[in-house]
Amino acid sequence: MTIDSTEKPLWVLGYGSLIFKPPPHAKYRVPGIIYNFSRRFWQSSSDHRGCVETGLGRVLTLVAYEDIVKDESLIQDVERFNAVKRDNFQKKDLKSWACAYYIPAEFAKEVTDYLNVREQDGYTVHEIPFELHIDEELKQKYSDPAFNKAIEDLPIDPNSGKHILTSVVYIGTLDNPSFVGPESLEDTAQIISTAVGPSGTNFEYLEKLYLALNELDQHEEDQYVTELYQRVLEIRKNKGIE
Image (cartoon, rainbow, N blue to C red):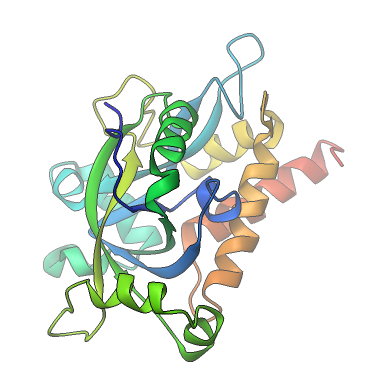
């Protein structure tokens, strides 16, 4: 499944590599929070960060609350990494910082075609709500009427007071052939420590994501990504990998 070509402006949500490697022609980049999903390195990669000949890598996907509550192993995973209590587990307990990109209408088709190729290994297109976090610094950065108009057209959540964007996002769902979860953090770390693909090392993907997330939100950390990054660093040091 791919995004249909369109002549309208396009919002694209990035929760993985798009955070540190934006799509072309992105005019605005707005941070915010994805609720209702856990972010995990449970999508195998044969076309970017791994290959069939030397070993598949690992890239990110989102796992929905509705799937998690039906699987004991997935519940245990979010209990550990998302501070979830199963007796009162709600959708809002799952939150991941991410960013949305605004693509002007004249570039929408070009970016659509680009993303449909970039995200082809098991990913499908979905639309999910995204809570925008726009501070004064961002308002000053994008102090043009077009940005204000793009944001003002969005609905506001009555509880949080934040604008809510329904955005296109690529997800590797549980039933796609490249999904490998639930996978232990140790197993994932061992793979990422050495995997290499056409786009570079798997470690580079993880490290750039880790650094980008820390820059995106300096008040909260993604415990899963942080622990995975630290473990991969240990493994690479023990193996003598620079």
